[in-house]
Length: 512
Image (cartoon, rainbow, N blue to C red):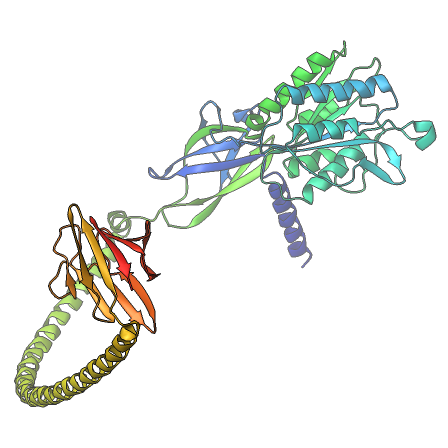
């Protein structure tokens, strides 16, 4: 029982180590088209490359001879980046101004691109248990906003605020914690601007370097040079695949150019490098997924290898006796099935002939029934159509009679003035009158109108003049040239005595 528990503990530990180091090495773009030859690309997180002679592949815990090609840069480079600047809040104004100028100059020279996520946080010693100022992340890509953040860093005078020294490593650790709380989908890094005169913190949990590598957030640093100062953050930068710079002259122009270079090259370095490789696998063609371990100075990793299945000829060649037995068995089964299908086919033919006879008889009866039903429907439709015609004729007669009575009533009202209204018309040198003798008076080129005006500029049915209870209304009937009353084109309008109407090339004047 103790041995089993010990084995499980060892297995869990190996898995944890493998997971933690998985981001250092990874296999991509496997090609098994020529299996057992395996081709692929080994991705290395270290942008400076790795020593391939120290990389070993293992299948079934046995080392495999592997051929590596020279490394190449990754093609798919992210467009944007996320950078958290940690600026030391030093009580020395000269140093503080140097940090600010270096950062401002790099931004002015185009270090920040649209879509980047940039934050600037200052740190020093703890002030009321707060180390980072501000303590929350607010990213931006606006240069003016970043300049404001830089100018907002005020110097903390230690004698008045605290008596401790700066905590660079604790500040980096808290910055990594802030990064872990936000969901950033782009390459990220922490850039430290400090002179590295820091207390060595005592970590109770995960240390800064391993945590940075696990989160894929490298540490970069621009340090203000001072004599007799050990810059151990340089080791932290190298450990996390970041870069470090310090100039003994403390030239802010040179430092800002170096910072600009770090930022411009960051996305390419963050993408890592690729080593094309090939090796001959020891696994069989079984269509199963096998684990391949990777061991190197970068750590342990691994990848899954899905071997292809054997094709039919390969399987027969490796199982000759079984193949012969299966062949004889299949032939025997085929003969039995052939005889069985032959009998079934004869029965099926007989059944189909019988069914065809039955279907023919049913179709004949169906056709007779449909013919009888069709004749009945035709008679019913004839009766319905006759009734509909009668109803329509009666309704039409009623409407005509009602319209005739209404027209007579309206015509009497039109005559109450002692005369009927009329149109006075003019066309070129011709003139005349046309009496309006109907309460629904139509005008147009067609002979069906009350007043036929045979002229090409007049539509077949141009307009209608309607009288209703002492009101005359003129309405366009969709004519080509339209209806113009008193100079305005209209569709329908009430007429008054003396109104002028233009119908094509003919001018009319309305008189009551």
